Image 1 (cartoon, one colour):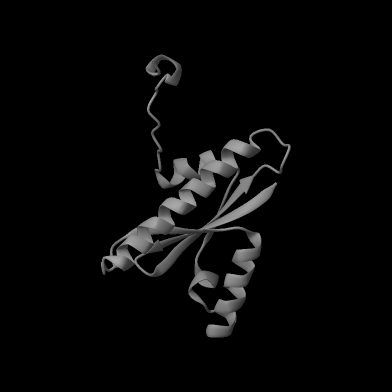
Image 2 (cartoon, helix red, strand yellow):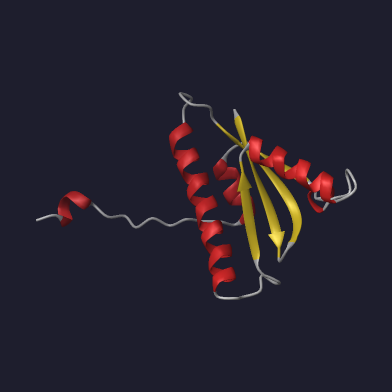
Length: 124
């Protein structure tokens, strides 16, 4: 199992770190869970970038920063250099483990709806 880390922010303050387990390549469910978590990551990147471009402040916004294991380790090392070790905002945030992407979505209340379209019938 691989792990993705979703840092949950309220404004600019990390409030929780979600450790999301995703199957390895060739394990059942790998493709759907990986594509889903990457799409979730991109949606949050677009949200933050759009807020920055439009000069909106993220003070009351809830958003997530999704990182793989290497990026998360790099983030924590950077935070340790910027703050006292073990005193950075992410180091103090509680961690929650999830067995799958779907369990993570259920806990945070995220529901991605996909329209039920039969593409074969809509083509001429």
